[in-house]
Image (tube, rainbow over all chains, first blue to last red; front, side, top):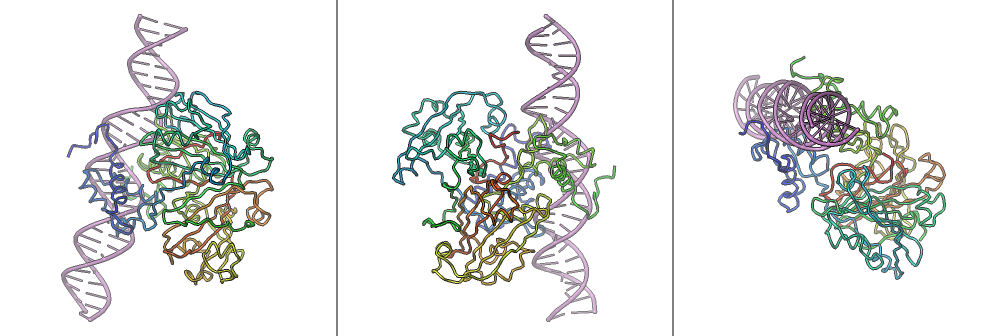
Length: 255
Length: 255
DNA sequence: GCCGTTAGCCTGTATATACAGGTCGGTTGG
DNA sequence: CCAACCGACCTGTATATACAGGCTAACGGC
């Protein structure tokens, strides 16, 4: 036992290692929903950590919905652990073309800028780092259908700004140069500000769906974007893998 | 100094007390989004706890999206602290309770009805089949926070209507009788109609997030629901399993 | 005046230890 | 035979301590 000094040099934090191993075993099916996972003291022995560290790993996984714990019994893989990996990351251009319509992208703005606090935070870069920025309006049959404000990590996709967005959407390009390994979507209903209203050609009180989306490739954040959709016209679907294949009318809407 | 024994008899756990006080100060406006909250060592002094306990309280509030922390700077109130996790299918009651608030469910309507075309389609039943229907308003601290209009497949959950929804949410009950094996979420931004506005206490032009949600148990559709959230206050998060753990400010919102 | 060092505060991580209380199975006494 | 008890194991909470590394402001030398 090394004497309570620094544990793993500059390596991955201990509790992260434990979490990763458990997640890996769930991913490869070694641990099934309902299965019991190692107790805190078993992890102490296996990883050579203190119980508080094992406790933290298990507690966080419980918070994240992966595990369920109960005192006196043990820790178990949560039964409702669906593989949620796909929230349909679709290309807006493909969707429009599928409907038999034309797609155009109007680049309103594109250039370099220094990251402010929010952008730096979102891209996991330092304050003031140089990032690429673009503002694009997507048109379906020449009608605006989406406003896309995007910030791109130049370390991952240095050639972003020289892409021709009329032949390839930003998303398409970025997916090509850096395959997505993780993503995050935060969805809100908002009243769009005047700029967005102007680009989308909306009336004052028109509700709008705003998606804040970030994608990762490995450890690096590739890009984050604010996507504005005129609300009533657009829908975002999230499905588990076993979900439905056939689209269904949303209740409360006229067919 | 009391010697590391039992701290507060059988009373509220220390870290919960700290979390509750911070949440209370946010609720009553004493702490505004962006404000700095007490540092760990200040909490140590104020509550007479160890730093690890203060650390846990702050860390959990960060996980829940209430606070943002950065080493060397301090801990700050997150610009947004209400959220719903879209893919981690969470219970609205749990979420509210976690925030230290009270949850009540007001059953506005409940009964049997014949499925119209849309409902039959959504539940994968035949037109005119008998289905169960409920309209429930969820209240957080007696403020309406969600309207839930639900249709339930009687073949899967025949006892649905006799459930006591004050002690158990519909979702909770249905998950118990029929474990979810798949789900579908469709999200839209809408202008709520007068009925929904009335229940949520919203102004005319307030945007609203509407989630159309269906869940399966095996081959059968268990239930479908329309969930209305007051838009600006609410957000939905969708993440891949390897996604970020730390909440980030949404671009375009003031810090 | 400018720049670099430093001291001090902050969070992040990790350890060892302690006591509480829940659950379960086995042993013991009626 | 059954019930009551006990001990083993588990999680939950809390403490005190330690070292790391990010950030800032103040001080001092050139």
